[in-house]
Image 1 (tube, rainbow, N blue to C red):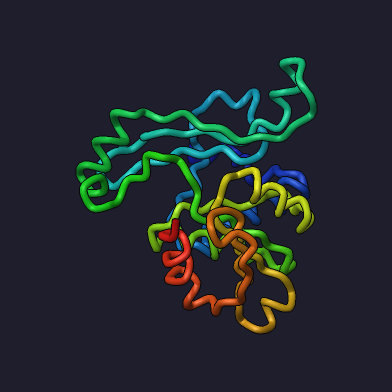
Image 2: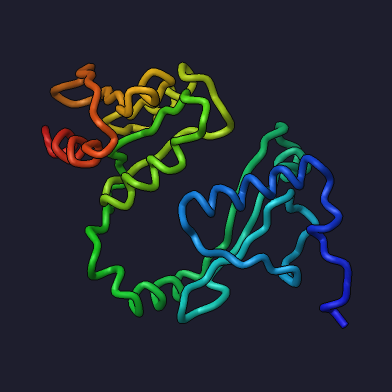
Amino acid sequence: MSAEAPKLRDALCEDCRLHFADVLGGLDRLAIAYEQDDHLVRGLDYYTRTTFEYGSDILEGVGGGGRYDGLVAALGGPELSGVGFGAGIERILLACDADGVLSARDLRLSGSLDAFVVDSSGVGLALELAHELRGAGLAVDRAFDGRSMKAQLKAADRSGARVACILGPDDLAAGVVTIRVLRGSDAHLQEKVSRDGLAARLGQITRLP
């Protein structure tokens, strides 16, 4: 019986166990519901660690993917980590239509970013902050892999975002976020805003010419 077969999660190495716990911890922090499926059927030969599928309340198997940390090198490229996924566009549209998503949201077709979160607080607040701002209707991205603040600011500028939202240790202690305008008529403007008022202030700035 498959229910009695050994589970992969019980045979993880220590690094993989910690990584898996970190992934689940991130989902918990964002209150994203998930199910640990020991019988997930995917081609696992080129995946590294995390593998996932996602769906909706009305459709299962809308898409799926995982980490491909060794794939680029295996194809002759540099040693780069990565993540990817495949999606059924028609199934996504059916799920969105059933949930009334497409008619309820302001769909952004330009691809431009309102804000880029730069986090050097040491406690990983970028995950929650980006999630909060996206929930407020803003287009937001952030850096990954524990980059330095300088590297994150360079990434923010390259992203084309209007504003960088900077979280440092001092900001964390004071309960504020530093806003730095990167482009537009008020470029280089910098101010500190309470986290509760951040989304509203960003809305004001991103509407300016």
